[in-house]
Length: 199
Image 1 (tube, rainbow, N blue to C red):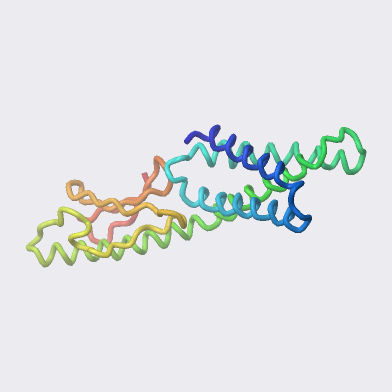
Image 2 (cartoon, rainbow, N blue to C red):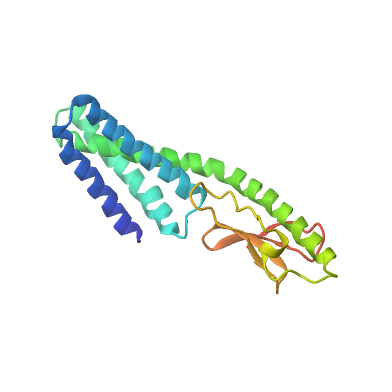
């Protein structure tokens, strides 16, 4: 799904919630906006930690769309509150609130991501030791698959939802995991104590 499609779906969801608001009691209306804001914030955290193969979502929705919505929505809401004109109704203010929620989520996710990488490297080190132990136990032969050396191999900690697994290459003798789409951390399994590198 492209960033444009996802952005349109989010706007359609917002408009659908706005159409449902008049039929709900006042507390439920506020809870509806708050729930949508929490969903956007959680989505922002997740996509900032691991883009799930959609770096355009983070760029166009997170770093372009959300700030634009916050700037113009807050400006319209402020003009309505302080000057009374132009009165575009309450929608721009609500959109600005949702944009702020998405941005806060992205900023929080950006702060969490370095620790995700560190934890993933630590888990990778455990897998590297398991591969070395398997190789030593089999006369220097390398396992054909990671599961042979580590049947219960843990995944990375790049995000909450379906974090990517480690990629073992028996030909190149490397272990790797993606940091974001198009960039990964990898380690040479042949050289003892080799550091993890980014590429």
